Image (cartoon, rainbow over all chains, first blue to last red; front, top):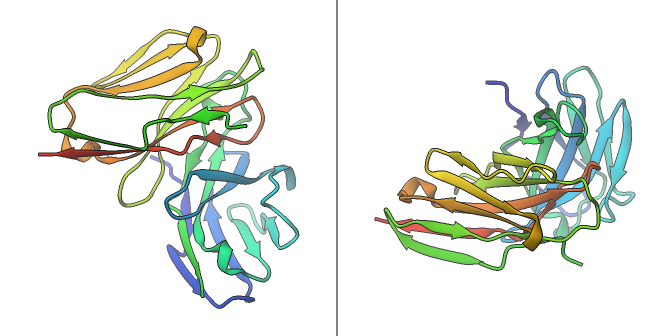
Length: 118
Length: 113
């Protein structure tokens, strides 16, 4: 069964450093998402991406964040200058279509990357 | 305002008991979509079910069942004859036709032998 994959599973970085989190969405999916989950809290939407553009972003997704689809398979989240409060689990998700009345809009999540900022 | 409320923070049951996880949502849209995801101790998010706002049929999948009631804005999840492997955090989520899933805070279910 196709699945979303994410690398690395755990990333430790120093405050102020740049990190890139990588995701490979399900191959026939067109919509890609990043969410984060601070330890013990709910999952929060960061950004969605379609047709090489950001389609929606939350207030959390400020100028220190960026997303990119550098090739036909990878989808990345870059945090330019990490802060202590960026420590969280980051989930990538993908869906075949946008929400529109069909099961193909279901977002499937990867296993997550745990980011620890020291 | 919180769009998805999961009032039960933690539930503990003994194996083989039935357990219901509550989810109350808030939206002004007439078309929306509701989801349940499971997060086992290993941390991944596993999709369980999706429901459209115009489909109030309840659904049963093995030991899992879902009760969707628009009149009370609820989408509750019942596990029948719970098992230790059901121990996880369960999230209810709402999509209002856009891109973002709005998650509840989750209910942590512990099933003990």
